Each structure stands twice: as structure tokens, then as C-alpha cells.
Image (cartoon, rainbow, N blue to C red; front, side, top):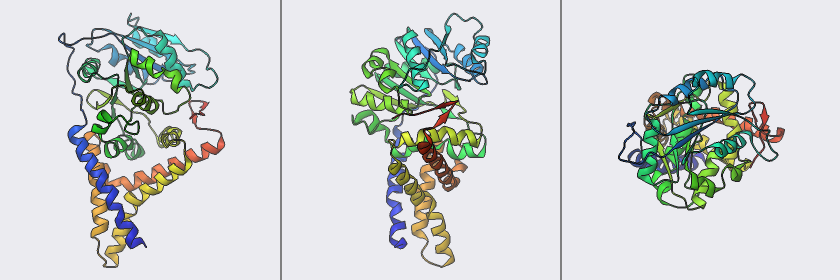
Length: 376
């Protein structure tokens, strides 16, 4: 049975390799360039929800205040922080008139905390473009200028930009880049940009840029108020509303270190992984088994083939296809190429994350920043 079943892994692996190769040539990559008077420079509202971000918010604001873009404001919402985030932000802002800190209102029933914070930010914003980002994202001085120019050039209603993910610890390097890998290997950028079906959509909340009219047409954050994966929900709704949705790689513009330990990586991914599988436990289980099949099992299969002197080429083909796809993704997102060799370990760690998500599912919901998240 295994002699038939295992070689079949080459087919999805070949498909993913082809998508990765296609994306290597067609996925837009943004290179920093200064503001230009030859294109419009609309007023941009940079909107940052802030909950217990005292350790990172100062560097983020320093990088934003160094932007060369001529027309922008920075609004931060202090979402009931307990670590003096507002004081840290005030120190970094140094009374800059472009910036404002808003105290968060009480969380209404049916809302998730981040979505409610972003809704309040949007109501206070004055910009023609609304840029939602996180408190731990660092910005190249030309980032806003480049993003605005991309919005103009593509006529996008919604643009999402993928930052460079800084990874230091072993588990960060094995898990965090899989977020980019899942887009680069599974989702052709050409399909995202030119096929209207919502299934061809993906976004990242670290940089979501809306034209104000498009944001209102989608229904603002009120429309996705109880979605954990708010970024993906916006991408789907943009497609459903027939809006012009675009995505781009921005590793040279933006960077962030999402998590600093295995505990943070596990919790951070576990809070999203079930929602990312449509809230379906069966789909999550299938996805886990599928990734074991194509990325883990070929390695012991190769070893067994060598030990028993059986043909090893089918296992070797699967391994090489997996390595090629993971390495292309790493190169594109500026991650270490050597980490491609450890894809089986990445799948094992993602399995532990899936187990955590299943546990939370039956224990009342994911836990994040002192809140229990229950959503669609």
C-alpha cells in the first residue's frame, strides 16, 4: 500500500514547486523609493492598535516619524494596556503634531479586541487612505511613499504588503516563515490579482492599506468584528465586493519580529490556525496529515529504501521538490536558505501548534493577551 501511496506525494509537491517558480517571476516586489511629485500623495492615516506593546512601540514610532512621505498622520489606540504602552508611545512621539493617542472604549459584546480597536481608529482617522498595521512593525524611511505609489500604479482598493519576518531562535526560524511559504507555494499571485473568486485571496494584518471608500463598502471592521483572522476576512470580502485587491512582497520596506520564544510562537499560531482552516477541525486534521505525507514521510521512506536497497528515486524526487519549494520561498522572503532542510521539523512543530489549537477549541477558545477569543 505504501509503495503506491507515498510516490503520489510527488504530484502535489510538483504543483507547489510550479506555483513557487511562477510566483518568483510574477509576485510583485516593492523596492524603496522616495516620494515623488509626479504622482498623487494622498493623506494617509497610519492606524495602530496597541495592547501591552511598551517594549516595541517606541522603535516602531521612531521609524514612522522618519518617513519622507509628505501627508500622513499616526493614530494609536491604547486598548486597556497594563504595561504603560501609552507612556512609552508618548515618549517616542515627542509631541509630534502628526500623532495622537486615543484611549480605547469598553469592548462591546460580539467583538474581538483588535477588531474593535481598529474600528475606533478608523472612526478617528482623517486620511484618504487607511493603513492598518501592528505595533511591532519597523518602517524603511521610504515605506509610505513606496506603498502610496503602488496603490496609485495598481489602482488598488486594498493592498496588503508582506514584511520581512525577523527570526532569531530556532523555533522562530522553523515556524514563522511558514506563513510566507503557505502564500508563496500555494497561492499564485496572478490568480489573486486577476481571478475574482474569493478562494484566491490572502492578506496579512501587519500592513493592510484601504482606500477609504473601499473600506466603507466592505463594511469596515464592523463586518468582520468577530473574525480572528481579520486580514483574511478582509481579503475575502474585497473579492466578494468586486474590489481591486493587490498584494506585494515588502521585505525591503517593512520588518517585524512577531515572537521571541517557542511559547509565544505556539500561542500566536495556535490562536489563528483553526480559524485559518475555516474553523473546521476536520480540515485542520486533514491539513496536518497532508503535510506529514508530503514533507515528513519521504525522509524515512528514503532511509528505508537505502537500507533495504530498494529504488530510492521516488523518495528523493519528493524530498528535492519539497526542498526546492521551501528554498524558493525562503529566498523570496529573505529567510535563511539552510532552513529549507528542516521542513520536516517545521511540520512537526506545526502539529504541536495544531494540538494546542484543538485543546483551546474544547476549552472555550484561544487565549491571547489576557483575553479569550471566540469567533468565526
